[in-house]
Length: 133
Image (tube, rainbow, N blue to C red; front, top):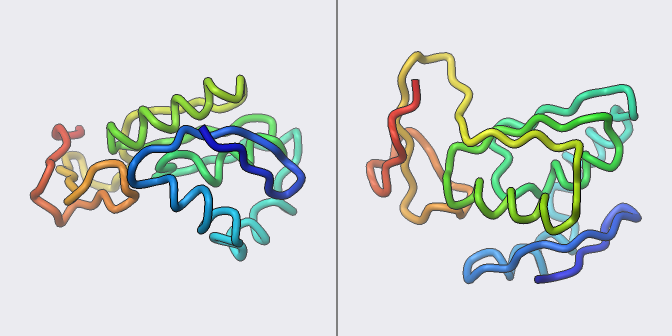
């Protein structure tokens, strides 16, 4: 576990072999600052935030403090489990997390060289995820 403090919000996250560096260094040092600069002023307690490809939750964990509800989609089962653990660890009740992908196609097959690392895509045959309809 690692304690994060960003945007005046403190929360804890699960640390695994490949994401400890992300949480301790990248996220803490301004990761996706322009994304947060865009999102945070547009959120309020009357709005729903939707995160497609939510990964392990770095954006939605913050957005949940500024919005009524967060609806998140993450097809990578490893990342999904970790995000789910982060939600439980912090007792966050306004995040709805779905282990699904959003696509304009009726069928897609996703994969990644390393599941859980925010690189799941439809052009990778390795570690293929189940066919999503």
